[in-house]
Length: 336
Length: 250
Image (cartoon, rainbow over all chains, first blue to last red; front, side):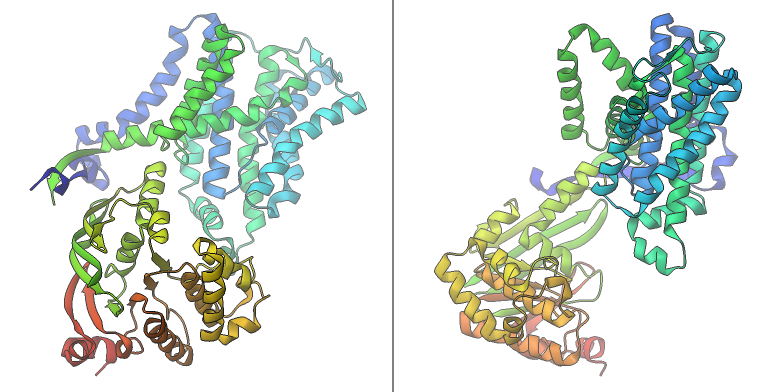
């Protein structure tokens, strides 16, 4: 047999196979095998602030916001089939609602953030709902335009501080509260969305992505389900926006910046499309990276793009899928 | 003279074997039939011969999905083409008429045929177009109609016509009778036979439903679980009791 006649065979680790059943409950070793990666993420995120200085703690807060957006993007793109480039709109709407409530009505962040999250998500969904019939690139274009719409609406009407923005908003009590609010929110969102996509709702949504006509033929109103899905993604985005305005104590048109639409996509690609945890990990890597590259000035964007291109070309499955495979499978050469 | 010779072909989808140690030959200027139930490996074989499988392989690798492994030899006119790009194979004369037709739904019949003839010279295209319209007069009437609005049978005729426009020397027909009425089935198998007779194009036709195809083939193979279980001329196949019971219900 020459070398041609061999192939690398991938096999599940025996422990993986056993863990898929209820047997996992029988052995600590197997439970640990399943829990270890999840615990690593949870404990890692929770412990991270303890090892960072003030500057990087702030950066990680921003990373949390991007993680929420990336999670929403991944959920909509991979499980509902809506490529939503409107991350900036979620941030802007959430940020402006909480900021305005705080500045004009004097409500504390504890009240404004929940109102902005739910109210902002409702408004964003309402704005997006006429475009839910659109598919593919058309939905992406419309959702990409909406943040611009918000910017020029505010400038043209001269409301909410117009181009100046509103400053001196209440901030959260201290850096520890700031960090743990976003970290816990990211973890809750991650595990809730992960659960959700495996429930009936997720089943229907994935069905809509695969073949919407077949879902319609099963007597399901697909627009209603799409609205729900957009609402869920908007909740995460609007929370991020509301949190952001109180993080910096300032709000302005930069809440509608394109970064909020683009960076989550990059994080999703880097982390692995459709893995949900992947985009979160991607955002936690990418945001500090873009900060660390700040020293390079304008070259920053170039380096950033090179890293992304490298990922798309050489590891397109993303970090998480790759790690997952290495964790659950081993390879061996096999004669054919 | 063999136009196509396949030796020791193995195709894996991750750890599952789709094609297992397969060996078939297509003789020049003849119609070779390939019969088998679903999941026998007919389409995988068609993809391997036409090279589409390399494309699938690339796509799956990008997604991090299943790995597709292709091992063995595919000899086309004596040359191993197992690693050749599908576009290059089409240029060399291996043209696939894919399963479920895959015509360009938003282009008109005429446009579909012209896309097929993109590799042909102007004179060849004109000649083949006349031949296709001669073979399938219906298409001539529907020249302006969009591909998506044709009936199943008309779409299949268009797909075969489009494949012919690419000037094949080996025409691969993957399930050309899928979901068609008996009348159209008869008509299409007669057309396949006359294509082979009049132009000398070698044809490899994969089909589940053997009854209309069996009379027109010169040589046939029955596939099961990715391997050949029976081979021979049409008469040999038809006389085989297993084939009779499986494909003719006798």
